[in-house]
Image 1: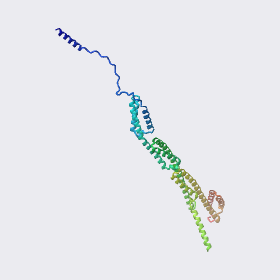
Image 2 (image 1 turned 90 degrees about the vertical axis):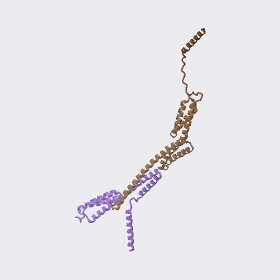
Image 3 (image 1 turned 60 degrees about the horizontal axis):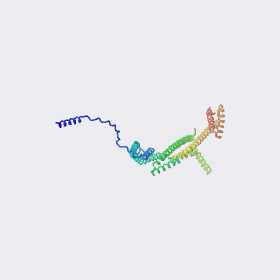
Image 4 (image 1 turned 30 degrees about the horizontal axis):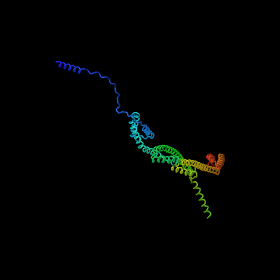
Length: 221
Length: 150
């Protein structure tokens, strides 16, 4: 009986213990949001890459090359922006983007320079042909010779692959030939006016003489 | 016979020369020819693109055109002065030969004086003045009547 009572007591105690509410948990401090990818602070700043990408961009922009390889140029611009955004924060990512920008700018340069030079040459060829069509080589001999020498120099630079020099020379030459053309045109028009004037004078002289001949052969007034 | 034949040939020759001289165009003058040559040079220079030379040749051509015009005007003036002087002379000679009514003698005398002035001006190369006097002679004579016209 005593044994039975102990068992009952022990069962009640167990029941009471199991029904009791658990103790309150302590409030945990909020953990900071972790970035998806960890920052690689160990990679060095890609200073050289940034400088090179910017230098190439300046070269492309100064020579007006973007329109000749627009897709590559836009890629290069995007990569440069990405590289600058990541620069100092995620240097490995920045380096990757800047390397891509450098490659794209180089593609722009290799594609666009020959096209740009061809266009520059074509522009000069047109104005040169216009000048020659009104015989600028005779009318403005020394000025034409100077423009032609510059043209030959530009063509030589183009053929040698010195595209920037060729573009610059063609630009200068375009101005020279334009000037030669304009001055020749003025001279040509002045000569035309003078010739017309003397033609009219001769016609008038002939009419007067003819009238005089008729008067003299007709027996006077 | 031989002499008169030779004389005839000379006369015909002179007449031929006179007629060919009068048939010569006023454009047959060195200034006009020079102007034509310069104009041709101007056009050649223009075609070659030598516009400065073209202008210069044309400018020179215009100078010679002016000279040619002066020559033509002068020849015409001489011709007119000569024609009018001849007409005036003929009219005065005619009235002198046939005689005028007394009331017109004064006109004839004046006409003779004007004719003398016309001749003098012509010989001095003042052709316009000669023309003016010759016209005055002809105008004065126009009113006269001969003795027979009475």
